[in-house]
Amino acid sequence: MDNSVLTSILTITAYAPIVLFTESLRVQRTMVASILTPRSIAPAITGCAKDFHRLWHLDDAQLLGNFMDDYAASVASVKHGSSFPLQNQTVLQLAGVLRRDMGMAGAIVPYEPAVGESFRTRRETVVHLSFAIPHKERRGKGGYCWLLGVCWTVTFLEFAVPIALASYMAISRHFTGVFLMIAISLLVMILVVLRSSTHPIIANQSEISKFCEDAAKGLSKLDVHVIANHWNERYLNVVCGYTSHLHALTNIPLQVSRPRLLLWAGRGLAIVLLIQAACLASLIGDGSNGWLSLSWLALYILMLVPPWILNACHPESAYENCTATLTKVPPIRFSCRRAALVFISRLPSSSQAYVEKWAWTNVFMPDNARRKLWQAQVDDLDLLTFEEKDPGVQGQHPSKQDDPEYMKSKALLREASAAYHHPQALQPLLEYKRSVGLCSASA
Image (cartoon, rainbow, N blue to C red):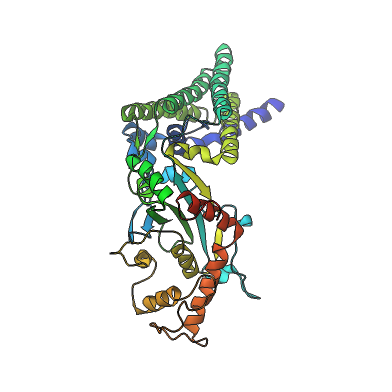
């Protein structure tokens, strides 16, 4: 009786990993992390037959961009007033530039809902703000030597432990388990080759040193990029930085230093993942060998822990080879879309003589008379006093306290100002301004 119960349990548990070989999990993110930085730890990855063709014909633009052929996000440039599809989406996700509903408990809330009102009753917009400050050269091999040592130690254990388990299973003549354990070690070895032999190539590198010199003279050319999955999105990812550097990250595909090696690494991963999926599928319904599935699943779960700890303690490690320092601000929750747009419009950006100041908002609302009136109202209000900059000049709108549209614009500016001057947003903003030469170090 006991044996039959145990056999039934093992037969059922053999089905546990089924989702792990019918889906592609972490293949792209793990390969990109291995290319971006030597300070990475490979988690357990799985793939299925549908990924075989994609990995077999892999190229760097596809890997670093939109690997799964999903709907691409879009970017709006405040300086140039243009919009374009986002490039290097996975790189920006790993760097933390692209965020969603994360850390909302510590979010900045510049707007207090009235009694009986909540954010859900209005069109709440969440802004994830980041500042990217480039340096003159890649810093992938400097600093955090102890962290590099930890990563390589964990990687060695990820390779050695499955080999030891495979030896035990070979002695016990459980050859399916041997293939499963060897597959894990081979996946780790392929990712190690990528980590130690490749690095990203970012466009406009020759201009970075010039930008750093311009920053010392206060002549920086700055831009703000607004990124969203679609322009009706609740979450807006905003990144500030030098014009050419931002376009190199969002508009120009990154390249890998050794594309042929990447191609063959992708083919090696495809073969090993296919063997791993076949071995797991062969164990389905096999009660006598159900413990092999559990052993693989236990090792799979354990391998997810070290990368999670690394990303939690040192999230900046994924961005270190992108020749920039990334500073992130907690999520900012605005009561409506227009308040968020007013806030973004006040971020540091160089103007273009031939580009209208609000052209970048064309993707959010139509360029009609109503919008022009709203723009005029916002432009004529001071960010600190919320009053007209020059009350003696009559603009396109009547500056009357009983004008509802005018009062709405004042309320939006007041909300944007509260977010702008919040300590958690103001301190990173001041550091950014100092870095690009917009204010003195004592400011």
